Length: 219
Image (cartoon, rainbow, N blue to C red):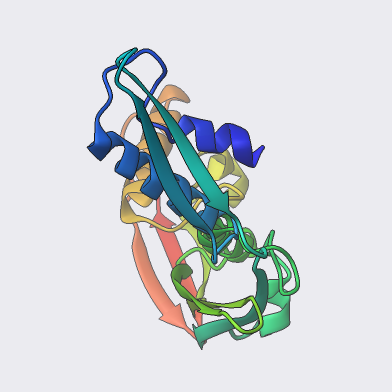
């Protein structure tokens, strides 16, 4: 699999005009790909042998992958309450002791955020801050910033909740945004008007108390 990915990084091709810049760029790209997939000690040395009689050149990339790095500590900065650090790390695809992969480490920020959103912490924010490699132990420390934020709940005033439930915002994986709330208000008006309530109007207001943010739709 790594060999196939390395082939895709090449900007030199058989039968094409040779560019030494392309050779160097290809070597750098292969090395970067290996670093991203956990080979943080990898080196790639290109070798070009010219056959002037035939006007061709053979290009060889000597790859020393080194030992694959594993994930050591995962540091979550910021506020994780009411969840524990262990609960949030448990939502990651690559956890401590597993092989490091930079793209997966970045994606794990979204996995943690999705977990929080599904638990109605829809204003949660999770950012991947970076990684730090220890060459002696071949372990990588990962750092994230987590802001759980308040629980977001929706209330309706003026009509029963069940009357407008289908048009209310925030499906299971939808994060908080005022655009989503605006669209929901428009859908409520349209839905009620289709039912014959032609003079229906809908607004929204927000209030936060005890780490609960309530979005209320007065109908």
